[in-house]
Length: 237
Length: 264
Image (cartoon, each protein chain N blue to C red):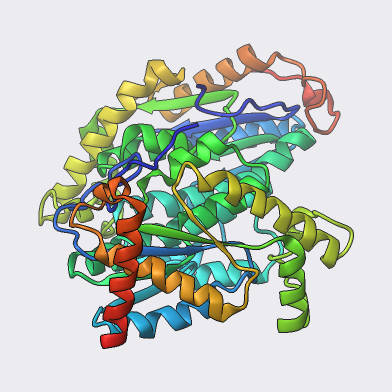
């Protein structure tokens, strides 16, 4: 059985995946901007951002109430809400929807938390298959260096503290991210990810993404895809 | 279509939950199911004190009552933008939280868990809205098999009269207005609840529901529920053996349970 429902368009769905610190959010922001400037109607959707479940997620995190299963399900609720109310209707309208993380995040994270692999993959069957899925491949130490160097304190679930991997939050984060990385790596071929070498410069990664978009979508805005008819609607790499 | 009739009580249907210990669950899990306004809560209000009088500790629980998601679901239903898959997922979150944090601990402690609706209502609502059955069954497969599921069944006209006489008006969600089943609340209620009944009927055999005629007066329904519940406690330790008993023995056990009830 296929993992996802087909995107019957006419819009296009582009998603990015990778571990924390892989640089995927920077890249999808740049790509959205580039598409917008070329006249495309672009929408953006971020993992765990639905206002509908915000309070529940906040409550669960604050009081550390989540089990692997309820953690998985609340994220599926968030995803379903964004899918039903935002992503699907916009794709039907003809927008290019860019998503920062997708169901693959759940496939990797929830499985690391001990959730049954077949169960979580079935859970997300209502999701639409992305037209383009970019995976930002980065060595664990590089990603850890970006996260641990730059930001404030790690959070409990973010560091996988609920798994009891280590009492030291930084150590827990290392082990947790390492396991998620292994899950992602094992999905690359199966899921048809376009792999971006995330150790390269921001500019060269972006160049590679744009090249792939042009190759897959063509240089002219496809019929049914919404946008403004600028001369610039012709894509230039 | 898979059939779960032979799954022993308190095992999971398809998928084990991570980090959950299934050993030494010794309480009883009793489910009251059925469409809206069929009289489930009336029966639970009677069954709980009756069970307590017999000396059982009882946990009563029901949909959207979890510490984690109960409040969020109620708030979400105040709005008008809750999609069918989102609603299903939110109810599953609520169910998982109650299963892991209330129901399983209670069963471990030997408590009788009496639940107003179970995973079947989550499934029924999704299926009545056109979601895929295989998807739903796999997703819901982490639920525990109850000792008994009593499906309070009535035709839709019976539900309509209960709503009108009992509450005086139709409810937005009970009428399935989110999915636009009809041109007005009455028509929508009738169409949506008819679909729900059909779905419950289709779940009855594979999930081993005991169908209870809920068109009878509540007192009569209560008497028949008491007799059936008593049988659960009367069954030998491994209740799979129950089905192999002869009908005469069953009647006997109902009588003795009734007698026990009177003695208490």
